[in-house]
Image (cartoon, rainbow over all chains, first blue to last red; front, side):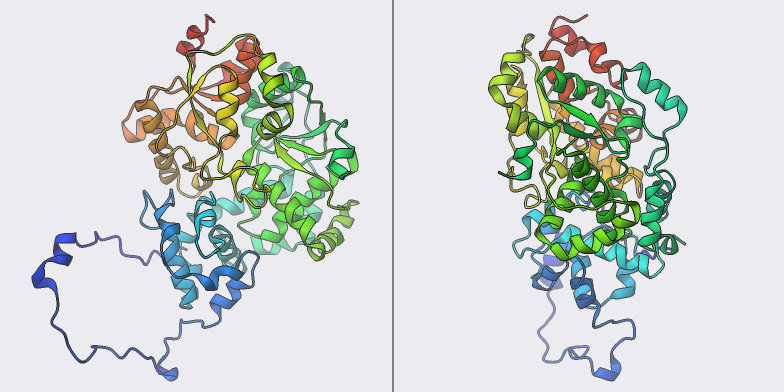
Amino acid sequence: MFVNFISKSAPPAFSQIFAPKAIPEMTTQLATPLIIEENQEPEHIDRDFALKVAQRAGGRQLLRCFACGTCTAGCPVAEIDERYNPRRIIRMVLLGLKNEVLRSEFIWLCAGCYTCQERCPQGVRVAEVMRALRNLAVEEGIVHPAFKAQAELIRNMGRIYEIEDFDNKKRVRAGLPELRKNIEDIKTLFERQKLNERLG
Amino acid sequence: MSASDSRRARPYALYLGCTIPARVQHFEIASRKVAERLGLQLADVAEFACCGYPIASLDARAAKLLAARNLALAERAGCDILALCTACTGSLTEAAHELQTDPALRDSLNADLAAVGLRYEGSVRVRHLVRVLWEEVGREKIQAAVVRRLDGLLFAPHYGCHYLKPAEAHGDFEDPEAPHTLDDLIAWTGARTLDYPGKLRCCGGGVLATDEKLALGISRNKLREIARRRADAVTLICPFCNIMYDTNQKKIETIFGEPFGVPVLFFPQVLGLAMGFEPRELGLSMNRVQPKALLEKIGIK
């Protein structure tokens, strides 16, 4: 279901990039035109995508991003896994690469620790933007199976872990109060929110 | 006088969330023990359910609705919320903050809450147990309760992300780049605290369900820093961080081929030991990595 379109091949070494012979000669003409004519715009570009994300809770400040990379520099996920790069994701959103973003696996890799959000010098609510992107993916019918499974447990029991008689006996033995096994209200609230349809 | 002040004499509604009562009961056992001894009254609200955090990724509004439901139940009981899980604390705190500052959102969520016979006016304050210990019980009372000083022990504090962030929702209680409340509390027991690289790094629990190896790799980085510096234990305040560092420690050691053997204690267990409780009263037999050496150092065999 998820398209991993970012190449995992190793980046070139610094010596390759900065070797004197690697510096190209100055040319007066660019290989490809910088301005894309209206009728040449790739079909997958959604020019309104950034605005759609900006309208979501916590999304408004997104448009201020100046791509400094503070988010990625402090990210505990990006530190060990190059698939996740918040600066790149935000850039892709601003460029209107809607499908590439919403169909990616990387939007599901944010740990939600808020480090980026606290540090962003432009006040971009990065963690909330990631949450908004997941919400938008879900609205397009792309639901991560792990989150779907958790939501179904919550709908059915009110919690992500089932409390069985065994658990309650164990709790009583430890001097803890018994817990109610099922909380029916949650089903009603899921219906009101029309979450059942989105879970498929 | 705020609604919160007027019910200072009221007990706190103890919010357990999903993970603690099912999988991490030692945190609950130790928390109830120390709270009772320190005069914090706790009440159980049987109807409390999920805080909303796990479904925020699917539907942010639905998550707020579940959070608001719990807030409404606490308000009906006339109680502020005392939570143990930092993810729950974060979810409920963020929702309480938004519902207080955004009347339109409150009206909209109340229209749905009416379907289950509830309504939220916006008066409930949400705090984590550790914050209440630091802010309300305070140094003097805690130090007076210490009968078995933990001198000579070295703890590596791990602050759960959602205890601190977003700082705005928590009323800027702590600077998320330089938090100190857990360090202070450890120091009040007589123990020393370890300052270490990556102290503020997330446990990785947030991606455990999506990519286990990635999540365990994030946890590995912190365990490595702590083990190198020979701390007697990690001390933490969130069930999910505990699952990463304690429950999964063996798995991390196996996958990455690195031995750690670092015990992981919930802060209420540390405080409970200092207050003279016996290990079994604090659920210490449920900790996966057994803190045998640590207990011997304070004269418990």
